Image (cartoon, rainbow, N blue to C red; front, side, top):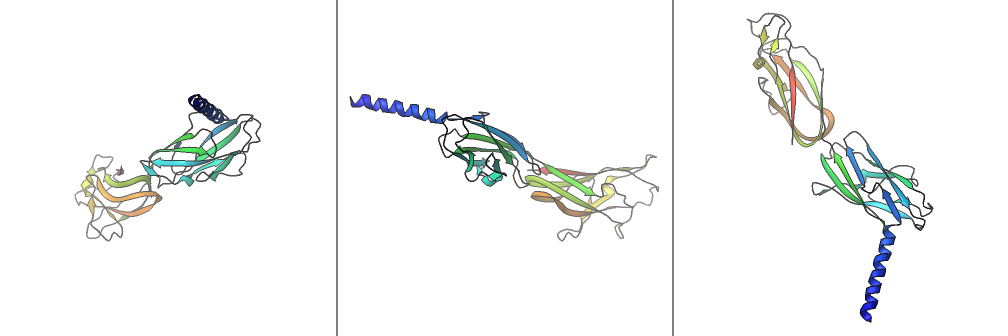
Length: 265
């Protein structure tokens, strides 16, 4: 007799739990899937459809948020609902349902704004409620991004000698969300419309005011100039270029390209 009562109670509890979980249906049922890039806001939304029996308030917060087995600051992920005038951080509970919806659906908007210090990769997490409503899985793919610009982007260099070099200065503005990176510089042979050329091994570069090495580096092959870590776009160096003269070369304008290459880790 005791055994029959225990079985009956167990079945009743399971049935009650299943009913509680069905009080709120969330669309899409697969959760949130976003793609994000530093410097841009990534947005998505969910629809919360309460049943007529859902008369209590429901709050949600981000319970886990990780990338590469490391915890991520939960305050980066935000929500805006019918009951908030602005986006609020999900590192704490935020009201999504008041319990007075009368089975009407409620839309919630979510936003993630990665910084340049958020490494590329797949960020995963769980949004949970303070009741028995279903958990919401989230997946955010932070894309790798590297930007580089120079000022001026076109420039002339007058040939000279190492004794009295005529230097052309160029500012480099660089940004990357890669944890580590190396910046390389190389050059093409300079050519004249007549077919005459200046070999690239006579094009030189160095970093202005570099206390570690003030040596001129030939650009006949990719040359590593700068290494660093994740950074928003910022001026990282002023480069100095000069072209070593050869008295046998004909005067005139020689054209070519300076190339910048980035290796990300």
